[in-house]
Image 1: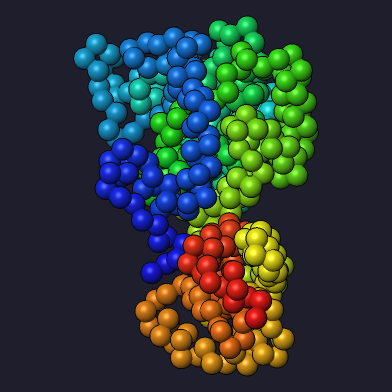
Image 2: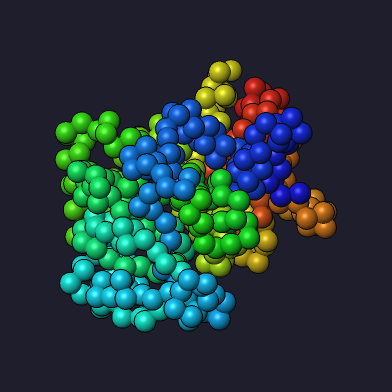
Amino acid sequence: MDVSNAETVTSDLAIHRPEILKILFRGSQLDLEAYDRLISRRLPTLDAYWRAQFGTSRKRPKFAGNGYQKLRKSSRVRKKGDGRPGVSASYLHQLPELTPEAMQTLLVDVSRLPKFSLERIHDPRPRELFRGPLLIVHEAPPAQTARIRAAVADQDVLFSESHYGYSANENPQGRLLVRYLALLLGSRPALWHALMVSGKFGFEREVIEKFAIDKIPVFPFDDFSAAERRKIERLFDDLAEENTEKAWGPVDDWVASLYGLRPRDLQVIADTLAYNLPFADNRKQAQTVPTAPQIKLFCSTLESELKPWAQRTGKDIQVLPVQLPLASPWGVVRVGHVPRSTAREAVQDWREIMRVADRLAATEIVLPDVATGCLWLARLNQARYWSTSQAKLAARRITWEQVDFLVGLGNR
């Protein structure tokens, strides 16, 4: 039993809140609480907001959709066409075409793009979709950034089917609107939301379908004050000049405030994206041995979470790591007040317990020790079990299941 995925979900809850299965699959109870805080804001989705701003055509939002598709073997010959597969692409000729290099920056330099010149494409795409100012979203978020890759083009730009486009040409504030949406979609809360609710991303695919992008909540642009709009300009300009994680930090904080999320929620989001994204790099990172600073942070977080409970009865608690052989597949911390020598001796008696835990495929062992007056917490020696979020969840389990220790055993 994996302690990080051992939540109980009743059939009634699954019926009325089916999204809970995906949230707990890729996240934890802490992610569910953050998600509930977000949806309590009752913000419109990007799809709903875009429809309200620009209207619909054939039940689809106007000026939004996938890019063009190249001619392929399956391209059909139309009855009223020219007798050739696909359609003529001449109406798109001479448009600047987006390149992978151009998507590396937040603001696309249209002057550096090549002109589109393909003779035919698979299906026609509306010319209005490619008019600037334009928000362009890549369907595959890069693993190294843990962000949805979004960019803005102030002029007309053509893009392929691996991108989603939103043209704000018909909006008098379109230039600032697409900048706002680029900041929002590029934030960590946006990718986290897609990971939590998408039926495919993080389950069977490593790309985000447009449906998941369209479900991301959007604080209405029209509700921003003049000062907030100036802040959008400033945040965007800073990122356009220096697209680094440090520069994204204020954006993440700002988007979190729009969503009603707390700093604690942002830490949960960061942990979930670090270890639970469906990319090979994240899976590898999740299974690496935790570093000494990671273990120290885990201990300090667990201690700070437990202290208020213990202090209610005049107790005090310390959480310290225990030195084990480097080859050990387990990491151990002790909670309480015991000499370090006693801690090392007590852990020696755990070998049989750990052997049984290995055989049963357990990932966590919690053992109150009356003899030493402490509580032992052992976890698999993988980084995913030693995050800040995992420390908070471990503290919850201890407060629920080890009440005797908190009110008396830890101060023997």
